[in-house]
Length: 371
Image (cartoon, rainbow, N blue to C red; front, side, top):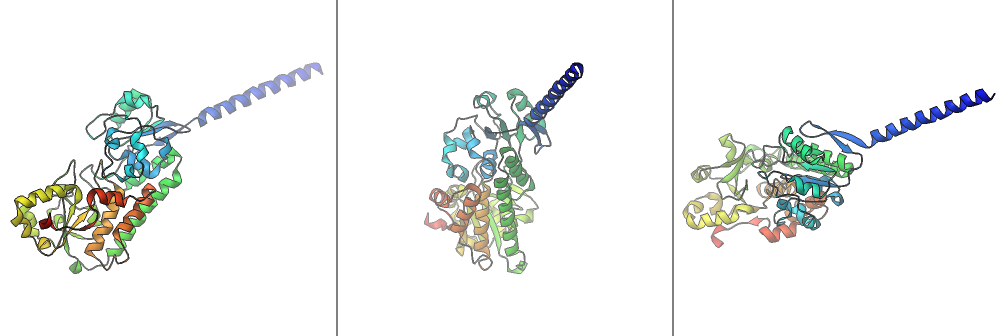
């Protein structure tokens, strides 16, 4: 009996060791998880992500839309600098006071030392466009780098409804433990796209006025010549963008004489380039006064949205304003300033239109000769 009891005891102890080992293995497996980023890289992360940073054009904005802002432990100088034109910073002024993790910008490489100083669990990045660059930063810091993607072709393209951007929002939510917030942001953007398209899709082509948008920002501010072909804000409301005649897409600089040839019914000027337009007007008054839109009082302002990549919220607000001016019947229920704040609340958590309007004069009619 003693021998049998001893054998049973030994077997019981061995079983406990085996179970303990299995439990430990399961626990170790649960300490990490793997995601696939927007470059198709598999990135292993700690099970709980509580400290994050975002580097590259628009990366922090995506985290504001979809992530946990309490987990952000540092910001780039490009984000911390003046919040002018950056609704995501206006809505979250605390972010500007966080430690600086590098200069930021499309041409400034990340600063591994400053990144390491804030000890993030993960680096969200739109800086790296190639896997090798993301891998190199990950190797230098020992910190997982998850690449996000705004979509489009970079600074010259207004990316609002790109699927890559939607996927990036959901990726931020997955990693940050804010899936519901990320899904809500993505769904909101999808719904406004559907709404804008539905309002205008059945308007006969013959009833659509021609339109030109100038002064658009692209790696800096520019005058009336700076515009876009296949411009997302006009495409989504099915507008007749005269620039599409060129067959170009994204940012282009036109010859001003071409604007005379097109002679659009409506002209919108991005407030980011408005000062440059006014300066040019003083030098070339006859040119501007020859345009039908100027003669007929059909020149309007839109809010600038291209500050360290596209402010998706402001771009959507602009699209509703463009629609309101071009197709007042289809947008009869829209009050542009109120709609802008609805958009800012949905994506940023608070309204900031008044702050944007104070900085850029807001939506409205422009009379160049009065300036």
